[in-house]
Image (cartoon, rainbow, N blue to C red; front, side, top):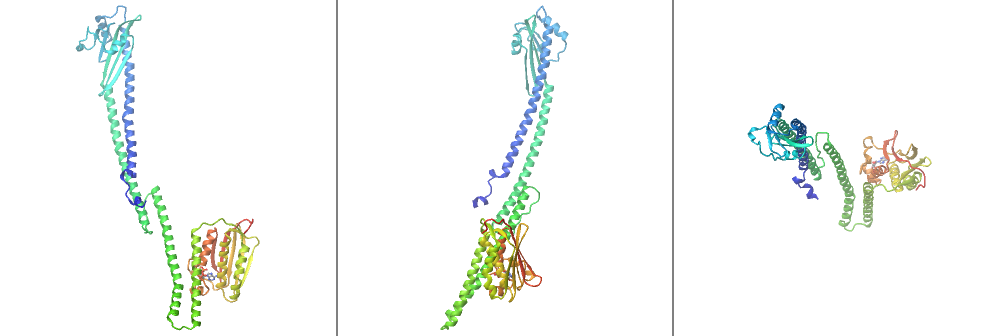
Length: 478
Ligand code: ADP
């Protein structure tokens, strides 16, 4: 597959060739039509007019010749003289058995012989004949009519005409059409070449951009003029690459931050174990103290890895089917869990919720959100401080605020606290057992449930976090 993508497209499969073949087929079809249909139609029209004129001329001569005395060479010659110039190339008159009585072409020397041409024979059988063909620019038409008197066939008139004039007109038409066809063909071929090479050039540009990005150069962008579909494709490609670049940067930062976070407790553990191993006859009290420290660091590692796993789960999995959850019950559980911590920090935790707040969520996720926010409010509080958790319904949303009178967050950091591993006061967070991942878990979880979370500084002191989640109908809450 990989190899197939990097190889050059064989010429016979390339768009350029497909384009060229399509154009060529259309051109050839148009040219064939242009060079046959009009010429054929014109020929047919000439044939038809020839038939009408030549047959009526033959009939006219036949009726002039018809008479009670039958046909004789002198009689026919007299009548033909009276009729004058017929404008025909040749006129033959035969008697009832086909013997030539009159020939307008004296050089032909046919008098007295038998005119056994098809037309005359057929006319002597009583038929009106006409035949015409077109060869090398000349229309050659023949017509024959029987000479009848009182139902008796007494002879036949044969008239022939060579028309080079009409033929010339037709040749002229043919030549004009050929010139037009040549111009159309050259124009269409040039256009097809221009379009197909422009298209393949631009597709090639896009293809090489795809390859560059695939090789890992996420900063690469395609620059393409125009407003057509290929330009749109290039735009979409650039947007996709933007996204890829951001994701890649976040991933790299995350991996490096995570390794850094894991490195610190591991280094402490190494240091402590080395001290125990290298100090001979260390007193048991110190050993206990060091082992206790090692235990604490291990616990910290455990917390970090658990939270990292939670974040990975949030990144990867789509939200499972969420049912309606009673917010009061979930916050009640978190409150119950945090009471001892609040008591230890000498802060007061108050929960004031409206009746019947129900959201559609996963109950464990919801617990995680409020536990993290309330734990922070207690952790980053001051002795004698307060924490309020308030909830109300606003339109089709449920709004819950977690407010504290604690150490607060500087304005410059307020937006960054949701970033992974971001901590305003590292030492304080560390001392409180923080990992810098709690708020990013909150943000990701809230987003996954179609809600929002924001932080702001309180007027006097402390911080206020606001979570909004879509409201759900209260039926069979979890
Ligand atoms: P941590 O595990 O460090 O608490 P969090 O992601 O929960 O990580 O919070 C990130 C940082 O935001 C904390 O280290 C802290 O500096 C700050 N912070 C969070 N909540 C509060 C709060 N209620 N009051 C003051 N600072 C807070």
